[in-house]
Length: 119
Image 1 (spheres, rainbow, N blue to C red):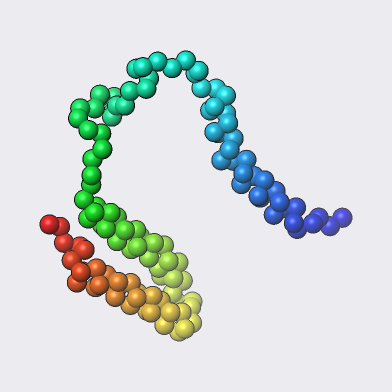
Image 2: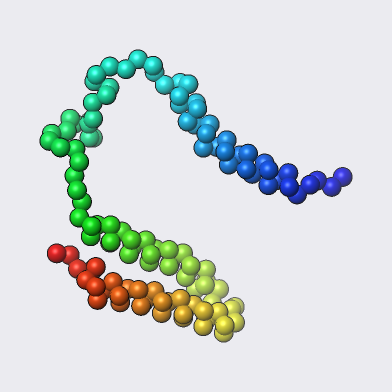
């Protein structure tokens, strides 16, 4: 008896909804219901906060994080290519060279705009 392939797709969508919803529902059912003023206070690392809790960070932190993320994702794409580079045709070498050149242009652009300099 042949099974229908769409059963697996439907099962995937059902489980994609159940897995994130289940912990939320379970925590709502099991959480303690009594609240008081001390439970509603904000704290950081077990210590009461002093002053304003809203702190503005410099944009450069985010720029460094984004540049790191770009090159981290680049490594994800480059690693399989590097492992199997001796088995790939020349066209793959051309593609990966274009990929690296494009990322190099992006890095050069960031460097020229001063996004990598810490002021």
